[in-house]
Length: 354
Image (cartoon, rainbow, N blue to C red):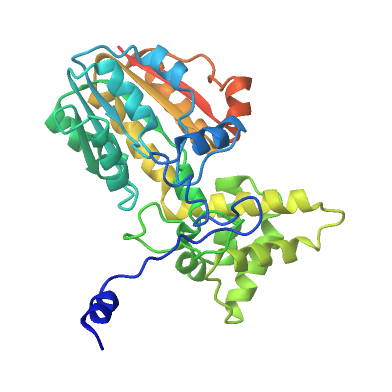
């Protein structure tokens, strides 16, 4: 064996990027251009222009309406309670103009470092942006250190990069582990949660968390499979069980079956992450962390969330804690909904501390 051959064998071989068959990428991994927006800005722009959200990205909703209400000025102290992809965060940072400080929270240990790195590359370092991995129900802990906030934003929606990644198990549309945790390193997965539930508990969850009309037949099918020893560990297994159960419903369409799948996954996700309980704790602590005249905007995507926000704001307004609240929820414009289909269910409510 020659010396030249030895050197060649010791060098790492070039690996070609996995290409997709056909004219369009289908799986999450195949969408490598969308997953690298810095390198393929033109391709990403084309996806967005067609009203779709690029894989691995999240398009912030109601940005104009939120900024108009918050009235952020340089030197203020603010909080982004749900950092996510950092879209809203970046726009609020622009308003601060490198003066003041924005605190940002998120429980997701997988996405948070990516967002932090992205924002740092844009020039938003620790001197203006303080990012922490923690649940937004712990806002009192941050406020004890940072002082009362002049403005707070909470976007309660699950980020698109979480929904789109099959490994997170948030979507019924793609094969993946039935996980659904916002923080996959804490708590139990959706698969484990289903194994410990009774049929009555599951029915109640599907009603309360998703208003699922076929809750009884779906819950019965899920519990029956588990009792037979058929553990439900993947998204496609759960989807199959739901759709098979719905065949008993006369004249139900495929579209209605898909909607039921979507609602069931949403209900389980809310339960696994204790989303309503976390929101209630956040709303309870909220008045105590706002400065006098401080403004809070909350973007919700589920009727249950919106009811909790509306009730809390109204109660605090009646007690004189808030001097003004949104009379009605603000909805995204038709233009925004056309450009971003995930904006359709969004509702924005706001309040101003007395």
